[in-house]
Length: 236
Ligand code: IPE
Ligand code: IPE
Ligand code: MG
Image 1 (tube, rainbow, N blue to C red):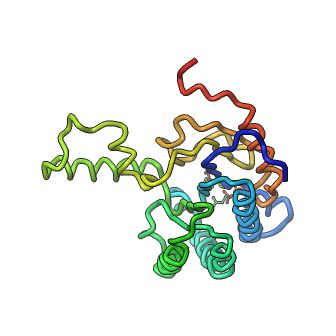
Image 2 (cartoon, rainbow, N blue to C red):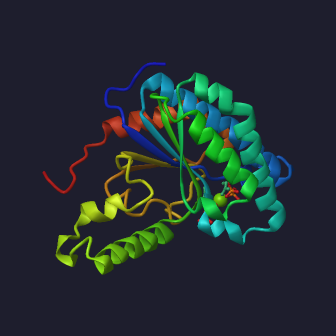
């Protein structure tokens, strides 16, 4: 793989289109999600090879709880399988696993598996793989507001001291830099409640490809497009 000139430090991906991928093949949606898990493996591997430090994957949104129970159950089972099957490989690749989102809403089995995976990889120093699970930016911002209000109430924080940094520090992503590049697969032109604060200055690349078809070459193409962009951050 040739390395593009300017590399994003943090890539965030809205992994969309698993259902449509399956439908086109006359398969149940579950099979699309299963095929999508393979793309996750590839994306992590590509980030490792390229030297991308942070990869945030939108795996399940706050709004995805509205889906039929059978689909939610299938997704939770797949998440569990993914961690069982891939944890050793991720660990060998020096990947450190993190999560953002309302993890306490996930089934206890998933919570336990995630906690174990995070603990096992806690000392790894390679790619930081951040899984957004039961994640919604509005929920995250509301929670941050509540935490800040509590600190004001106890006198730990004065209202006049609150700045953008204060808010950043109370988000689930406090330990990570903001994403440089946002990729959304399957063509939809919306954020779907993903990292609303953190994506303020991200470069956006949308591809028509469904997530199960999104392979290393597609990631590289997105990074190449990113490297051609001129980021101005409001300046000249
Ligand atoms: C993305 O694929 C995976 C999740 C949202 C969990 P979808 O399930 O949204 O697939 P489409 O959008 O219906 O094709
Ligand atoms: C966004 O995809 C959430 C994830 C990829 C996990 P959705 O398929 O849920 O988004 P909408 O409903 O098309 O906006
Ligand atoms: Mg979708």
